Image (cartoon, rainbow, N blue to C red):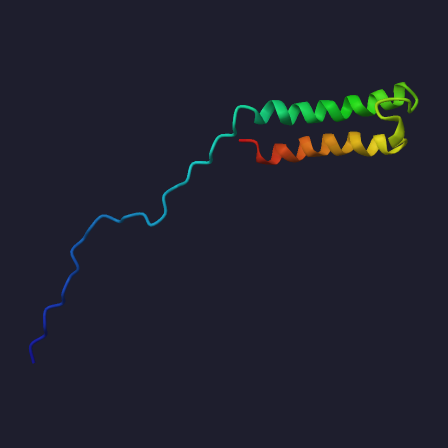
Length: 83
């Protein structure tokens, strides 16, 4: 029995289903805010220790340390999104 001819699909260029997404750049204000929070947190803690708890907010008491570290940590967390 004769064999049938196999059908060949026409070759066509591969079309990418996903385009390589280029990460967006951060807004202009991102870096100054990021570094500003880190520096502000450091200055908050230094002010607290130098003034022996009288400043920056006397009502916070020892929680001023937490506020300073909180500001600095938010700044450091922003570095993970920095492009």
